[in-house]
Length: 173
Picture 1 (tube, helix red, strand yellow):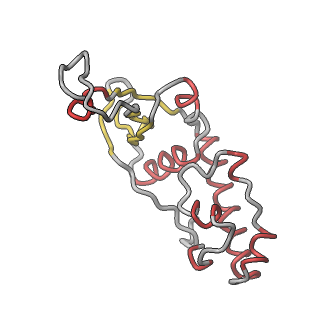
Picture 2 (cartoon, helix red, strand yellow):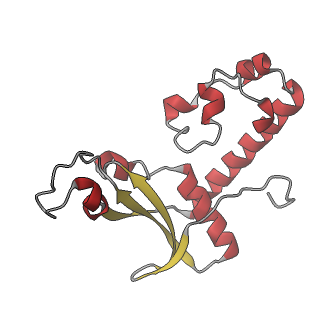
Picture 3 (cartoon, helix red, strand yellow):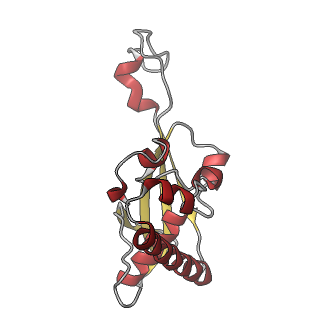
């Protein structure tokens, strides 16, 4: 927010030139399979929106956001030789990796809605901590586990806290 009370932070992997768009933000993501489900998962991804928004604040020449998908599929771990490379699979595993770029498009309006929602959530969580404090049972009542239903837990750094039935340290909030 403009006052600096709430700060969005993350680590952008790369700023890179793009042949058609100009300067873009690139985020590297590994996956077991680059398929249509994986590609479409980026359409409304909040991390992509946040990074794009933050990049524009610091560099108005940024014109896009790209996900660099790195597919590292499961291969046999035995001493079976790969038919393509003639060596065991553990020796040529990375040669089987696939790469694909996915462009993530966001309008100015979408990024502004993301910013407003991020501020609303920050205020909600601030209220939660001030009202509920360290009482784990009360936090569970005020903070239902919505993420598993919306797939928003995908990269959340509090996964262990939720998966542990709210028994981990509350200070991590």
